[in-house]
Length: 210
Image (cartoon, rainbow, N blue to C red; front, side, top):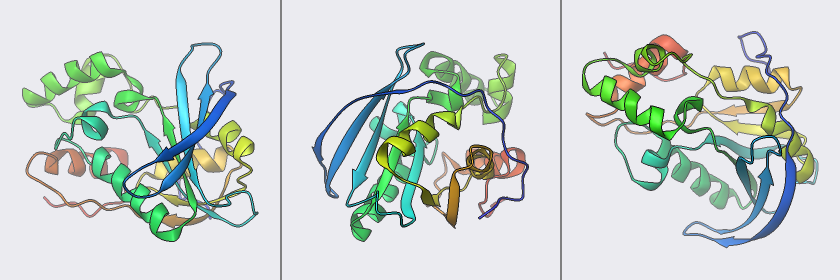
């Protein structure tokens, strides 16, 4: 499956496999695989369920870390609910993979994310806040996905995402996306503007509610 956007070219990052273990969760008993970037020491993980190396397209989510949403249950974004929905979908199917990339705040880091939230409290949207801090709207590097998938023996994805840039990045990495699976989360008064900004400025495939 090809996106309508040109492939995203990104600097390739080296990644090394460390170890694996079992990870029982509310949804299923996953296998957790740990990876590290030798150049930075940054750590990433993948969760797998079932036989993902059988050559068939794998239901998958490429999820960037969001401490506030994933662990602190923030209502300002859709990250935590997307993470939970993806794990539940994989568990319901009995097979799949979730790649968890440590790229907080679309790549600006946790402390700068707090600064960006302060700017949003004062009226900026999520893109404007990053730009006022001197960052691009999205600094994430998806080249990490390639060595993770190679290690796991995954050759084709049924990718759960609303982000066309992520689809374009997979195309640039020559990662086959056999199917695009939307991951739509219920809105709330705290994330409504955030989601509309993702549609209008980042091109996310959501229905805007203006």
